[in-house]
Image: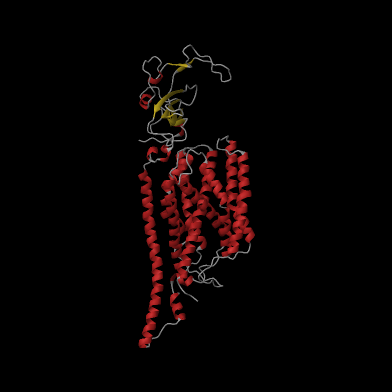
Length: 549
């Protein structure tokens, strides 16, 4: 067993009724119980006082342990919340308990604090969430010599203190690194193989020239060398591999938004790993994400415009406007709908209207101008240069086997490699968001995020190579979806995780699915952009190693 610390404590729970069958999961066999007793433990630490020679005490830890105890009692005061005074008897007691446990027995000379064994071994049973309920509490002061004021947050920063050992995360990271090394070795073999063939052709040409001078042998011409070079495999699509994709504006906007989210995530994780986002500063993480996303608007504009010009697009202003209002507009629309539901349900998580106005001002007053400024520099820099020219007429694509199809490669690229590297940390992140558990282990998260992006890049490069080696040059959108496929599995895992929350409210379903769909879509843009940029680098590398007229 282990101790798990959360933001608060549960006000109750559900369990089988006494007359229900043991282990039954039927709704009619479940009963709601309320935690009507809490142990409040205050731990303090002694420090030197402001006046020399004096001592002071600072509270460094506050622990609440809830219990459910069914008290048979008779109230001894007027139960009127609107009254100015409460009537108490001469012993200052609000109720007389007929079946007290040891800690609530006023006739006992020895005062005891409530313990787990004391509650479970009594015959009282849990308190049903109905009728009149008596609430009780214990207060216990304990001196803690080990925890100082400066280290009071370490309980949330240490994995071992929250019941999850560090070795669990290290094993997950090591497992991911093994897969990374295997993929890296595979890609290295592909690159070395192609480069070695090119070097071998050059050495053979030099050898043929030397033999010709000595024995009057024939030397291959440049045209004959090029003909041998492109007679099979990926070299056949050299005139089509950099042909612009379908819907180039949409792809450019997706890449720009993905790069904006990627820069925001990386910078936030770096600052969090360095300790700037301390748990003592409530809301610092979400504030950092919002501020950095707004400031990275220039990155989105630059990448969108540069990619769109590379695709020979003609509607530059439309592409820039979509980059400024595309993903932010979708995210803001989903947020407004979710916030309206939260307000309707009178949830404490609802964002007030003044805060929404601040978000709109940040979007329209800061992010949007930065997008246009970035787009200006992107169009000014021009299109990305390719090592080979593109022909006027596209090459006919031969029939592909089923395992090289879009659905299969996308599905395998997401689940086999990419999602396997992050599912462990994703579980802890989900617990932090939806189960009120702390997550301030950004060092592990940063390592996992780097490995996750590296895996997305490598699996996309590998599938892109097999695609163009099969003489299929339509790799732009395929590389984007292959890299982003892991986000689909993240969303699927989120839906599976939702079953553990045991929610029966329709509003909870809508809020959960809405926010997780938005998060998964943002992750899709990030990983898709990483996959496309990696495939673009790979194609420029291998086609730049050959000389084709």
